[in-house]
Length: 239
Image (cartoon, rainbow, N blue to C red; front, side):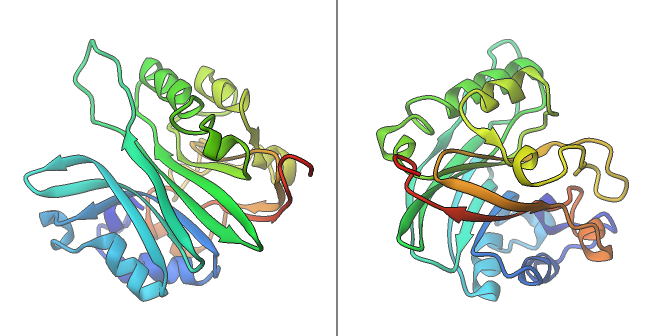
């Protein structure tokens, strides 16, 4: 959500909340969320957005500088608990911005859906090690995750067919290929040229429709377009 600063350079938490409210989602996954940063008026953005939407939230800032946090958040109107949040590995030969992920369990229709929301790095080698980590025992392959409906989503800074993408698709399925247009693009919002933002699903999650809304508001609110998924649930061990 580009720390609530749109491509018009206007900072507005309310505009982000209005953009989300228009689609009435059960679960929201946000990247580039700030807390106590001067450029965003020292607002605790995840708390403010959750209040405006009347949702609960879990937030993890992998980058903290001078008391200001920058990271990822999961929000929901349903019962939700934080399972795990943490830093993702990077490459050792260059000093890069720290990346992380947040894992929340959301109760929907009697199922405990595991949501892993992340934001990968800018370099190919970095993204590959982060993809392997997310697919490993600390996250998607954890016993508390792999036996339940799983959704991995976020800004992966990578396109379909890349090495990073193939690592992720080796564990989960790209929901765009199941229920959307795999050629859709999400970045930059005003003239989308690349699909950096993905939703991957495991057994027990059946995408029904995937959409990337292109409206005046979504084009200006952030530098990325949002991704919407409508889905149904079943037991991943039997469904």
